[in-house]
Length: 239
Image (cartoon, rainbow, N blue to C red; front, side, top):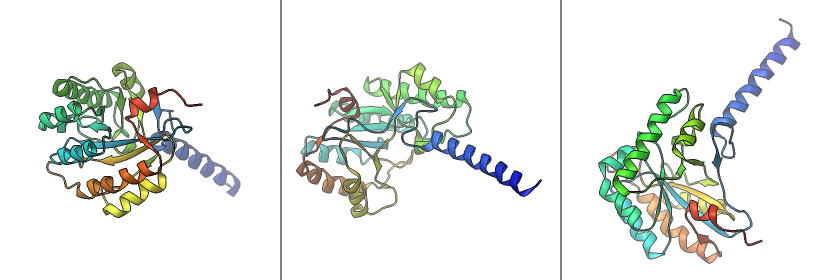
């Protein structure tokens, strides 16, 4: 095979890989399932979202949000809801929105459509059983979408939600988490944090809580209003 042909083949493979990577992980991608990653960029609103809960530390986070009269969206794992149904109920009773984050927080890439549907459907059932809520939004574990997710979302009436900025709160100290959120916050922004660590019991989310404690008043001072994802998407434009 001559050099020109090798180059052409290599380029085609790289391009195909790049397209698939965007479809799977790109925050603005809707190729594998309907998805949003921000609200109206003309409105000074942001949505706080928390993945992987509920956890034993979620009530502390709820107290902090209540102190600032902020409502958030919690993307819950079915396994955690079954383990801590009363905390899931407390989240819902406090006026927060509940979304679906799969049952066991498994990655979806290279999984069958049947596996994907089962993961999403079992979480939907667990959340409804514990709280009476039927989630309308879904966030894929690790932000990984795959073939078959479109059908699962359609059957279960779910819209995918990615994020505008992610806090990396599973690895950064509180100051670093807060700085990422403050640097990335913009009109219509969806901010992604975690009130759990996959489906592990008793996770330490102290850095997340301290970051939220620092960020909320600063964003309020900037003139942002906090909304749930559902309220953000349903609110009429100010234009």
